[in-house]
Image (cartoon, rainbow, N blue to C red; front, side, top):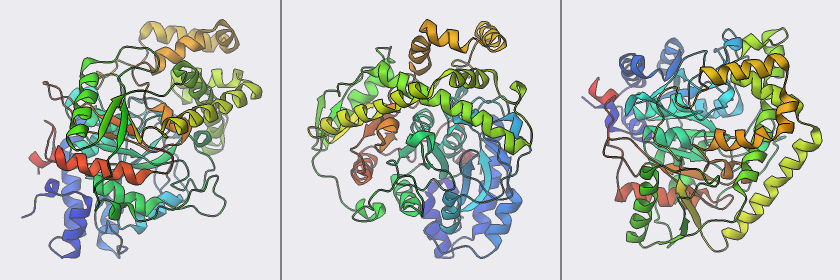
Length: 498
């Protein structure tokens, strides 16, 4: 009898190919694990068990993940005929009419899709606590959040429900939950993965990807997802070889800059600092050069530029609800914080928005120059340990203030007062490291190399030059071999329940 959680996704697919297990047996094991563990975590919010059973019993495409159970984040990628809520209560009954391009590629890879995972409303926050579906916990401590916005996927993978799940990253949304859940999160370069039927996702800041327990699963899935279709907003050259194949080689000696300083001059938890210093020592033991250094960019300017896009996108999201709901969007359709962000977005002029977007080029040029000296840039993934449920959400007094602003429509006054700068500092203080790679379009990853004495995970982030996913994967595989994390199981782990 095989133990489901002893294998990564490619390992399970190999068992299917050898006829040592059937896809339906894998699926039933995965369903059992979800039913056993999910009540504690709230990672899976839409069950698609019947769809999964139908797929597992049918003609599965002969892809690299043939027969492997898979969960999809309830945001961006659409599955024809399935509920698609984006974490929004106004979309509770909306059914997606078609498969997105990325969804088609998941299916073509042989994945057996059997559920959807939780996400904050519209993927807006670094924690997963939507009003529509409730909070998701990290499997390492159910009183703490899984991170966001791919928090449901991170929690499901960390808990052993599945070895791989889908996500997206517009400001750290693959890397943040990977850090909070003790798993591997990889953000590809801008343009690496198709955005069809959309154009730019968050003005080019967002890209889809996966969260995994093993490095090779992430590399193999990017081989599946990479490549543009006609009319794509961005096009990037294909890699010289498949990413999975690139893992057969160790990376060259790398010169890696590291810092533990927040770009917003905000506090960084001692454990997150220790995680980076620990990683630097490990890198040096593997023959790499690790130096304390950081690129010279204005962290507050980056945060402001990011939030300018963010507010505008929220305003557009609320407007886009109308054709999906068949009526005008109301404040009650979305969360209080979302409506406030949308109000701020409606106060931004076209000139403000374009000027902020122009700054992205400054950050990209700065990083391009920085990478002429350093191959990679190492930071904490986030500045805190996995936050307590509710810790980063508005308290009652703040909710009253938000309601007052919305009622009186004080968006323009708030903008004129300079309070948005303070909002930028406050909103991103706990998670200030990840947005850089989104605005510059660079690939980045969170690697689970460090746990505290209380067994809380604390990931470290590596950022590579634009288009150089291969070096990140090669280094990640080397780190995975030197300090394995695959068998490091949290208290809530499906392997103990199946």
